[in-house]
Image 1: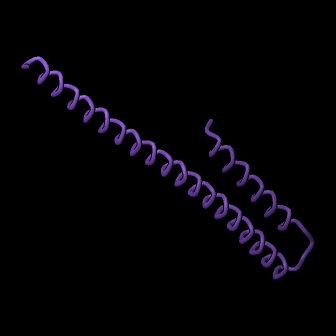
Image 2: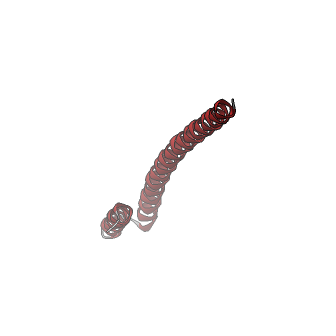
Length: 96
């Protein structure tokens, strides 16, 4: 199972448990609704933070991969230029 699904399942379980605990607590309806709203807001903030962390991590990895690809391209371009120059030099030395 993917770790993302596990994390999502745990978060959902915690949220359901918190809501159930609030619903069965001996509070007035308005107080219960306020608690549910606050818990929902806190859960949304946590999920948003985790999503932003994931997005930041993916962006960093993409940027690093892009830099590696650009370096590899430049090295390949340099090698091709060297090979072309060496080939021309070899051809000219054989002609002489």
